[in-house]
Image (tube, rainbow, N blue to C red; front, side):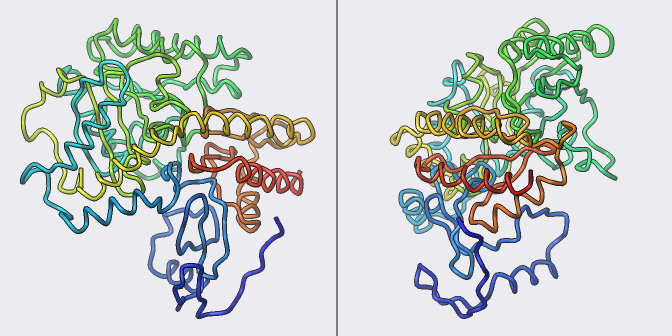
Length: 450
């Protein structure tokens, strides 16, 4: 796809028949004048509307979306069934607050989530919140309360949110913690088995994963008494850290350690659940059932919705008023989420994610033969990471920022994860043709920067 030249014509009548009274450049200038610079922008694009796997700016330029709102829009933008559910609920009840009274969308959402959960969580109970960070903090609060223990083990390269409690667990980028004091105490971090760049310098994925498990064991022997361990929180696939897939045996090993210590295994599926990896929950790739799982991003179909689901006996031990949220489980967000979950199931999007994910990975592995910049290709389903490297093998941290902006100028939107990995997480509804077109744009950009 040729690089697109910006247009200066305003007002512009877009594809939806709306007459635009603002240009993308003007909106961006207004943003710079009023919005905190703390929000990092991967591209210089301003979106006006979206449909399916595409986004459009204020000049009507079309962008293929390989970001999906950061792995959120699993069924694409403005899916008719999701839009109808939102509109129908908006005409019925916009907000009631779960503390004030019972609401059917809240109950329907929890029942639907429980029905697709792994193992014993199908009989579990939970609570709805507004985001992944809140869902994670809810899971940690529950673990500490029901075990009457204080300590949590988390992992380097893991991301669990940016609020002060979730940030204490996050260890994917030291910049997130800069000049921040007063984080949640009682958190210990262990290296995640990032086998391409094993933190312990192992060359085999099997020994890398085993070594990281051994470090958990060593910590429990020397630093953290097992009787003080409330839980281990882990992303089944590390998201912000680089779309890192752990070796077989690692997640199972964590389950065994928790069982032995009487601690809870908490999985952060905020970025991985609802079909993204080809399974409803990523942990199912390893046949492991957690005690607690945290879900968000795609759960609300684009609206703010998070959930914590746990074994029923754990949640039942929590007394009334132990946790809550004014907006958590908002009726409109719940209806959007219910419609999204139905689409994922009825349109068999999990199998589709596996098929297209395998195709995308195969294309990049083929390109890797001629492009040394592609250091590693990894992922499951439509959660694919392409790690870019410098000639000396180090992460291409500065190059990737330039490449992503070039790719956006060519009509494709995507983001990065880790230091230098392209994060490919399109809507699960993308077609083979769209996947091929997106890969072509990326490979061409990489060739220009090789």
